[in-house]
Image (cartoon, rainbow, N blue to C red; front, side):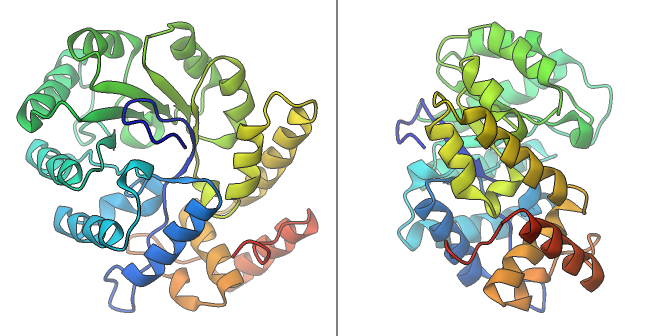
Length: 306
């Protein structure tokens, strides 16, 4: 992580969100997870895809963000997701994040309508920026077309950077397409930080001038990912990357969000972690047993770091 408002880098986690039996957010558990991630040198991309962000209301997100900052978490180590379908929701959540000092936000494009033009997306981001009207705002665009079905193109980034050179600060590329990430890196936009959406691409991203990664499995394997980020110039970096890939390939065979939460619950011995909000469903007991068996077969444990 980097504490500079406009120069973030390192490893970030889209922090998984625990729920009580009534499916309200379990803020106590969430704060504990956030504090542990920070102790592992990993930043907090709360309200990311794997946070079940789009199953949370704007009011819930505001309440959670308040709780995190009130407990003493450094807002400069957060990158809350503030992009919503509704323009007004995005503006409201972004304004509140900045009020708390969380100036770096990860922002999905509006993702309900399909076949959206670059012009429409530019207008959306422009209206958000001008409505928030705060020079401290730093937007990290969130490119995840496999989920959002809305792409953030190189041309759109170019237009936004030209109009808002300081505010458009970077991007998370969760396309899963290394060629797309490389094309972004090759543009060499000044003061524009490019994060891979998976640690699978971390080494290649760093080798080509990228900032790091924002990865789902940083929820459970944070220190190993951070160590590659820190030591990517070392002679064993390729081996570190291969080990990360091996772990990631096991976990992503299962539904990602339930798998992440079940792994944390297993090692914490806390079944509250197993809950997801509908329409998601929890990982089955048999799948959890298989998953734990597979990751422990390659030497994984969270016991040393929890």
